Amino acid sequence: MALKRIPLKGPLAVLVVLAGLFAGGIHLAHQSGWLVVWCPWISPPAISDDGSGTLLKVRDGDTVEVRYHDMILAVRLRCVDTAESVHPNAKRNSTAGDRASAWAKEQLLGQRVRVEFERKDWHMELDRYGRALGYLWIDHAPIGPGPEDVLFNEQVISHGFSAYITTFGTAGPHHGRLSRAEAEAKREKREIWRR
Image: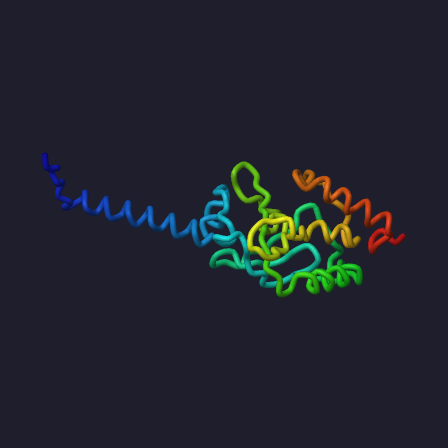
């Protein structure tokens, strides 16, 4: 038995074409990362298919910019708060912030990274300045998550540039790591713990 073909004419043809364009546009926006900007409740796709990304800029000790599909995405490190170094109000900047920023640049520039996004209610969590909150991993070979990778948030704390900040909640699966990093920094009297 042959299937009867429904002719696509007039309003039905227009409706089918519009539905196809809409579905294709949504798929493209999701793959490019722009859907997260337009609809932040959508769960973000990985930085790339293999989970790695390009670090574009280190703003300061606790904020970086990464290539996120076809966008530049500012990422604020979760559970970390270093002294200011690039604040618009110059009075808030400090030499401690300059040291944290210089150290972060030294550690991160030229590295392949991946971001483990903090998610809230099925969407990428943003801070009040619109920066994505997450954990930054220095992604060593092979590409993708592995035991050889370095959790940069932990490194910032263990080097004493920040306390383990739990004001907005703990680091979930990384809580133990960050707690131990803070204890080590205090014990060794590094940076902010020198007093």
